[in-house]
Length: 328
Ligand code: COA
Ligand code: ZN
Image (cartoon, rainbow, N blue to C red; front, side, top):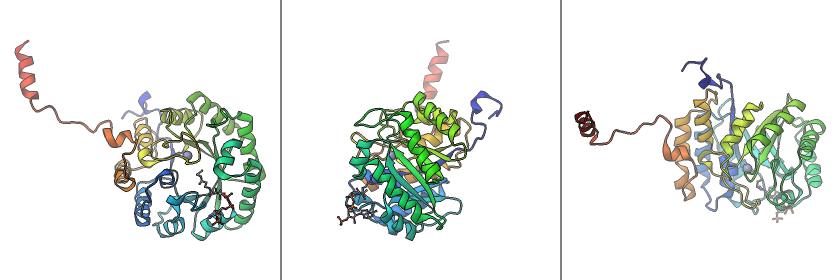
């Protein structure tokens, strides 16, 4: 491809893809995926070149039974150098379990919306913040990185829009008061739209240019990929996504699948961005999901193939061409 061409908009710019399917995806499934299959999926995702993998979550096994094997999965995966293995953690108990299981990073979670925080974590936001401050203290000196995922930053399914200053104030408290290395702005129930995404991404980038910013979109209303591209244009370079497009928070009404990793990787590769992801390998991993979770997955690329996966000509094509020529 001609790299000076407008088609090569990305110009090789690096975009970090962070796979959350084995956490955000499998947490929502009623079928328990056997531990050895989870480990094989994470290994396949490592080989596909994802920058970061959210392997599992260390929450209450009563709240999320699908991930009750978190320790074993995180301990038994094969670690590929350069890939960051992270896990979702809601409290000190979860942090201790994750550190014992050799997580590279803890992904702490709270919601920017009071109603969603209470429904999901059974605490007020202030109680969550105090608890997560204790987690940060417990982690100090261990070399384990801290990211904070803020749910419902683009809207709450129960409260509506969450004001931008409220979202930025929680970012400030985590980055400036607790020293979190990264923040993820989560669109938990697919309420984000591209111009809103551009505004919040820009506002974050201007205030904290050195912080690691991740955007986490759900495709609930079909705007996931549009939101990714709007965020890139506004300065973002890290995205959570889920292979197969599975996912969703069981404690958020109307939640559905994350933006689909193979759809994002496919689109960004066409536009000239460098995601580092081997799409055929990723598709092989995603292709195993329907058998493991017992239903079809939303991925359009699994169904339609890649843009230039061409189809054979119709059987009677030569005849049609002859007939057309005879009509000349
Ligand atoms: N790991 C394992 N078990 C945990 C735990 C953790 N990190 N945190 C709490 N528990 C257990 C407690 O031991 C207790 O078990 P018991 O009933 O057998 O005594 C039970 O969970 C309740 O603990 P409690 O401290 O009273 O917490 P809670 O009921 O207020 O629950 C959460 C708070 C956040 C721990 C729980 O609601 C949870 O894990 N939710 C899952 C949230 C989630 O993953 N959402 C989707 C992703 S955003
Ligand atoms: Zn999510």
